[in-house]
Image 1 (cartoon, rainbow over the protein chains, first blue to last red):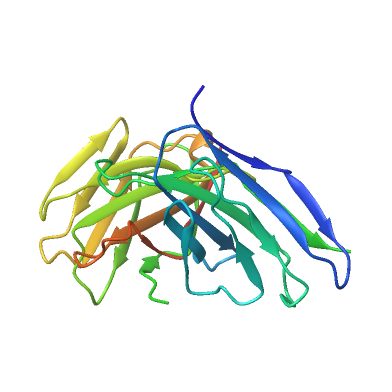
Image 2: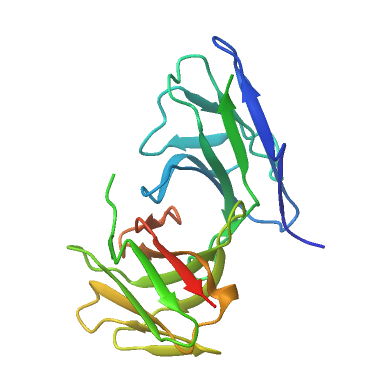
Length: 113
Length: 113
């Protein structure tokens, strides 16, 4: 089945630790996005990438980093500089010709120990 | 970053009732999307709108692209328990060439059987 796979579903971070969230898609989409979701705040864009080896900061990039070495993969690292990392993280993808529609993974819930 | 104004923030209704929610913006959009998010999952597309005044239905759901291009409405008729979840509007600016979407804060719907 084609889709977007995020892993793990649940992740715990210790103080001072970097953690990486995985996002893989087999939809042959060019663009991929990372969002952070907090209660009552909707989805806020962290980073996005339109092509391999290129990515741009979104509205809340501080404390996060990404890479795009393969078209299918767009991992997000939550660094120790992110002081309030507890949230639900969503990955999405799209391509030209889909009318702006983004398709989402099932999300990763990150908590701080 | 810019966000859409979505209202109401939450609704608690009786099964069988109709539901109405809306999104407004100070900017003009050329695409309006409505998503539903089940608890602990990623958003799933319900309806996509591309033309001012467009009215589109998907089963018991009906959405409209406002004439001014600055707002959109979603109606759910004869609600059932599985309608429970968070509903998001999302818009795309005409100037966007990145595929970026701007999201509303979400409307949380609870249905009492």
